[in-house]
Image (cartoon, rainbow, N blue to C red):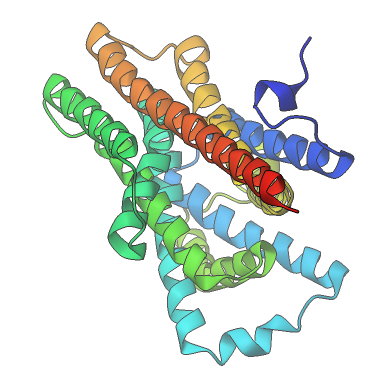
Length: 321
């Protein structure tokens, strides 16, 4: 069986890089399997799951920060209007993304949700062009055009925009754009985001409790345990991702990220038996072709640059006295 690093085109990796690769795989597999977790909570309204996820994520992050004795960053964060504004925006985007995803899974739209995370990388590339003035090569533009054609086809075949997929793709892409500008370590950033979410979320849960429709303590013990566990399943993969991103090349991280929507798609079809018509297959196929085109163009360009650098190095060596 060939080594994963060879399959991914990264050559032989050292121990640290292998660890980073497996952390990334673990992270994306955890995200890909989340539909099973949310479906186990189908008896709980999506808004209640979201509020519990905010509260218990914050609690779990506080525990980790306490263990690590990592509090020095707080003073700088609370005294910076830019940081507070940025992370308030990321908290709102993350809340919207989480809510739509949880609702979509329990409403039977896992396949459409997976579409959102398939097209998310291309949306992120487009935002990089619009807001960071990054430049794209012709074939990269072509891949975005093909993906747009796929979304248009799905829109025409549905009779409406695939709004779940587009909401998930754009909220997460804008979230990533703002996080790139914020430049704050993952755990500290998560603490700030969930801290901003915490007060509205706990107020929401107390309000529901006061009106007799609360969830914690009123559901089966397994449901209560799963609600508390939302903090763990949220924060742990994020820590894995943050560490992996510091160790392995971005190109490898980009390839591995498709593990998540592929698992979601498979779960939607094979386990939840969601309908997948011929028109959906065509639309998904167009978008998959766009992703393949973007990936292949990146490999070709990387090899071209490497060959140019090697040729330049040889030329300089030959000219040396």
